[in-house]
Amino acid sequence: GRLSRITVCTRPFRAQGPRIETEMVGDKRVVHNYGHGGSGWSLAWGSAAAARDLALAGGPQDVAVIGCGALGLTAALQILRAGASVTIHAAERAPYTRSARATGVWSPDSRIAAEAAVSMDFPARWEAMARRSWADHHAFVGLDGDPVRFIDQYNLEDAPGSGGAVGPAPSPGQVDFVNYGARLRGLTPRSRALTPGEHPFPVPSARVFPQMTFNVAEYARQLTEAFLMEGGRIVQRTFQHPSELADLAEPVVVNCTGYGARALFGDESVIPVRGQIAWLTPQPELTYALNYRAISMVPRADGIVIQANGRNQMVGYGVADETPDRAESEQALAAL
Image (cartoon, rainbow, N blue to C red):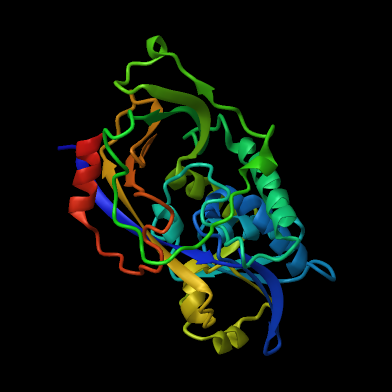
């Protein structure tokens, strides 16, 4: 009875990992910064720093940023603070971007790349992005509106044979997604196994750890406000083809269009990965997160996020349909 809405997002997965590189499009130097899978918010600051360095190679100058989601806002802010004049050009801004439909937890290697497709230096570059982002997110902990906060997450396991993962069936095929968690050992808080007397859940196994979470709506609002107050501009504009970049006054363009880069730049390497969230009305008294039978529950100020992740990471792979499936959400809620 507390279900208020259902949203669907298409995460932009690239087997090679995020595209952070420069190319010339006509007379514009275009810096690409997209393709972060399910790790856009988590890696935003570190990825934006890499894009900033490419954009400002040769010194500060006028820069256009395309896109106003997590990657666009953080890139625009870092370039602005480096001394350049920055204008964001975007069809939509928060809360209507795809980034606004994110789960809102620290997940820096969630469908970030495929093991067989990454370059030799990618793991080290990923680690640098993750470590930089982890540190920069802490600047928002404790601020009004809780844009970033830590909450206890309980990972619960049933006895064998008593119930499997809940969620849609995985897509056909197999992608060996990278798992780089070990590279960050010692950076993030560790989990702890609980004895039956330390928790109220009717399961034989439970662990808890402090999970970094993002109040996405408030985080995006604060980033937008900071960008505008520090002298940035936002212009509403939709681009249909790279040739339209010639109309921009800025000589440097940073492309942070996420999944939109597939259509705008014809990048067929961008694969949609569908994810659906059921939103329950907010409950301020709910102060912990759960992961049970592959269902995640995360309380946020704008609502309680419920997501049925299914048996493995192939769930939603290659699925661009953004039509909500109420039965999927009701199945997850029933299990919880």
